[in-house]
Image 1 (cartoon, protein in one colour):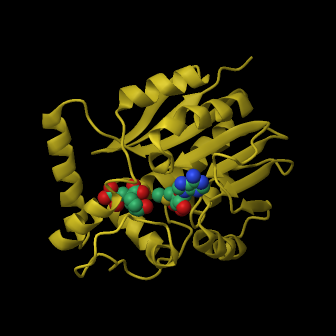
Image 2 (tube, protein in one colour):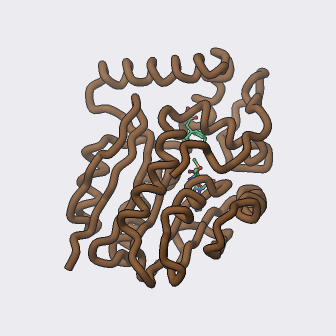
Image 3 (tube, protein in one colour):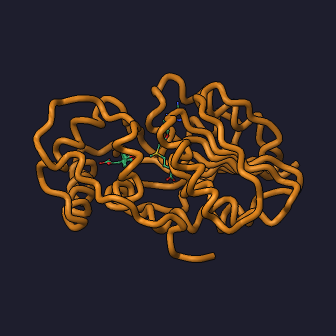
Length: 252
Ligand SMILES: C[S@@+](CC[C@H](N)C(=O)[O-])C[C@H]1O[C@@H](n2cnc3c(N)ncnc32)[C@H](O)[C@@H]1O
Ligand SMILES: O=C(O)C(=O)C[C@]1(C(=O)O)C=C[C@@H](O)C=C1
């Protein structure tokens, strides 16, 4: 395991640095171009979570199974999974419905030194075929799926997961106490400021994601994961309002 992200840092994210018309955030070509810089400077703990996805994958991957990275973007989580898979009869699939992300992702996969094949699908994770899974990752993707569609997706993942398999679920969360919500949001914004984002960038990004990134509480996540068919839900990482959970299906 290495602590260095496997993707070279690309362009600096200045997408929200000048005044722009209010418009919902989309994973288009301009975002894909700056994405490694954007996510590293915006998500507290992202640079810790990525190498840990490799460690978790190593623990739970099963011979002859499929591994999925749903909402793979440029493949940072896909490559972490790839390096955690020690069986050469496993198949690794990355799925994203942004053409711009998938095109760049192909390039990063080609640069990587592992020989395990990765198949990339440019399609909606709501429709993508899932079967015989041991490790599935949703690294900051479920938050972009409309809340009323989330239970169906998680149930499909749980059904496709073998006994002893897992879902790694990372999300921005909201808190049930208004006071905690306010404190954690302030700390998150301080993190962004410390990473060089201005007040204008922070506030314009906040408005752009307001209608498209819908955070839910840890309780909501736990309950839904259990209803979907996972037997154990563990929070293995939290920094401010960003968490990563491990949902485990008991071994038969
Ligand atoms: C925050 S990024 C994921 C980051 C990535 N997993 C990583 O670890 O670097 C969310 C990704 O999910 C994708 N996405 C959102 N909704 C989707 C959907 N319904 N189907 C497929 N991809 C989706 C977006 O295009 C975007 O690339
Ligand atoms: O919450 C924020 O302020 C963010 O910018 C978060 C977030 C995310 O969690 O995915 C939103 C969009 C980009 O993908 C990068 C980061």
